[in-house]
Image (cartoon, rainbow, N blue to C red):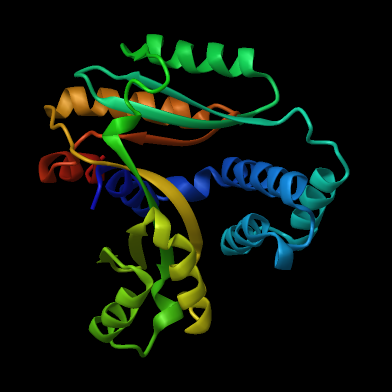
Length: 252
């Protein structure tokens, strides 16, 4: 499992995801709005919006918030929103890839640069680090949604959807598929009546770099500060989450 996803898993265990519920809702609302703006307000005819609605429901977002975000996109209130990315390095040469949706690019650049600077990193030029990441589809499923199923048999069935990796913990199942099989896996899960908690295209590091515990914690502090920015949707990295680092984080 990639460092980015292991970090997400640790945060989930520590309850950090629940503590940032408003941030999660804000990100999903932006996605709903942009998807409706670009492809229309009917989820049946707009695959991106259908996926955004699915993720909103998976995050237990109230129905009225979902409908309001879609109306905002269809009504032309989201014309200023733009999607952009930033690339940079953290202490120890760790690659950091940031995805944003913003209505003010100058503000987004300034905020992202400030976080890099404060935590000993540096904002780079776009394209300088993107080759270090592959686009993959990542599906997260609550174990309760597959209760009674044999997980080994399930894994074999999901190979038809392009499954590359299936990771299971005490609460969740995480599926990783190639970029080009994202839609196929989504359709397969729907046909199997398995509802994903989230289904996203993520950037997975092609190789990872290990640092000592103190430097690693410094990199993760940078990542957490970046994730707190209002314009930021997701932050990806190639820090190796070693067993020692995982143990140190879980003991905090």
